[in-house]
Length: 132
Image 1 (cartoon, rainbow, N blue to C red):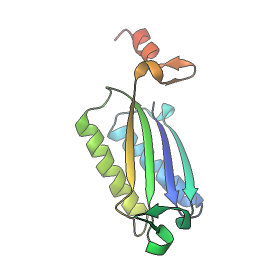
Image 2: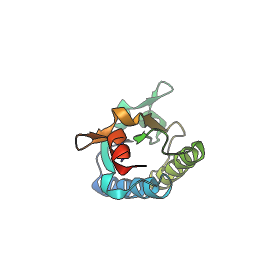
Image 3: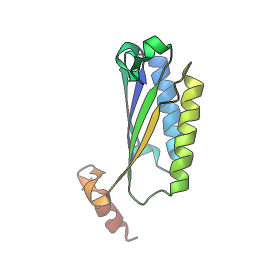
Image 4: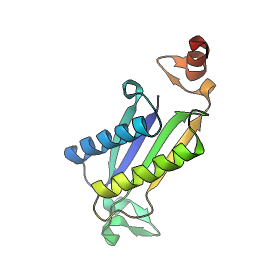
């Protein structure tokens, strides 16, 4: 039940937003084994002249960038799965964005099950109710 926030450089683009959401959802399902009905994704755009890497704006550099934060329940994915997710997200974004700057980040946030949830219930509660 991940919550995902994607920041993209540039001006809002509905077609790009849809392609990014579809690809991020697909990789979140296939690599991290998360279920689509509980994947929540928000996309925000930041103007290239307001996004700085190494003291220069992306507008000055003539490049694009992204930042993706994904909150997942701690201990539900291995280090190898997380490393693969990071690689595959970066590759997917490079295919979707022209001149993608290498300094584009993916942050997998391992949230404790007792401190994370949706629908008014923690993931710890859901785990206990499942009898696992």
